[in-house]
Length: 293
Image 1 (cartoon, rainbow, N blue to C red):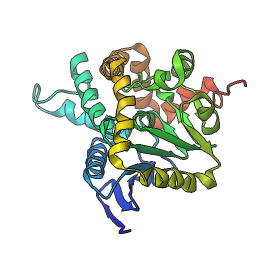
Image 2 (image 1 turned 90 degrees about the vertical axis):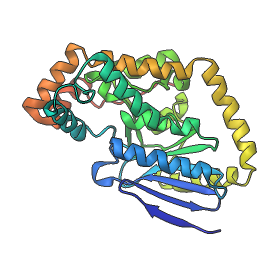
Image 3 (image 1 turned 180 degrees about the horizontal axis):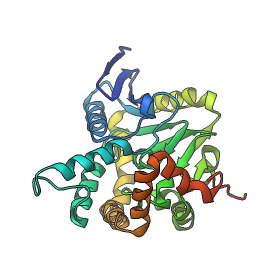
Image 4 (image 1 turned 60 degrees about the vertical axis):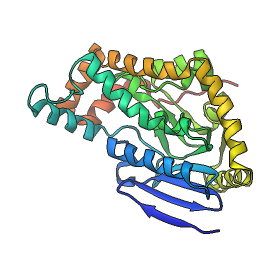
């Protein structure tokens, strides 16, 4: 079958044998999420959904990590530039509660694209899938991880709450609380046992396993695949999952007003971002949640 590859600034897109691959292509920044990357990500996913040559989509990350979260360097730079803009020109990320919620909702619209696609989307997770990386991955239909992948939201220790909340739908209320109240991560093998991801395999086998499952699905009628994907997602919507995403953005905006976030921002100014993260994470040791079986 024909295969073609094209790249934009932050995304590589290829199609072969009925499977489109959308690769986060920012390895120098561990595929950190910026607004520009997410716009290109959404465009690539929508093109894959439109192409008749595609039945299944795989989302992956270039380099050592699937996605190490939101690009905080870009975020803090954006806040600084907004502060210097003429007052009242645009909503500021450091403005009111409503301004913050509005901006978070715009990001959420881009991240939610896999959920809204008709075609199934598989997230292939290796290395770190943390913070915003989980926001991206948990909107995919199937998550397959390397056994040693690290998946979690450490930013809940000081910086906010996940602005996209699919956690409870994957692991239930107790483990959602366990992970969000501590910011600890799960290794891929444990994430699979809890249901946060569908499956984990040794890292060396990840590419082959994702290719096998995507190829099998790609052999089916894409309209039939759409029927079976969408009925499950409609059940989530009827159960309130889409409303929960709006509430998640508002809860993150609320969390940005806490003393913890103010103290963390002060540490960023004094210690730099990496230094502030080290101070934040020190009480948690390895920061890995280890379920008892």
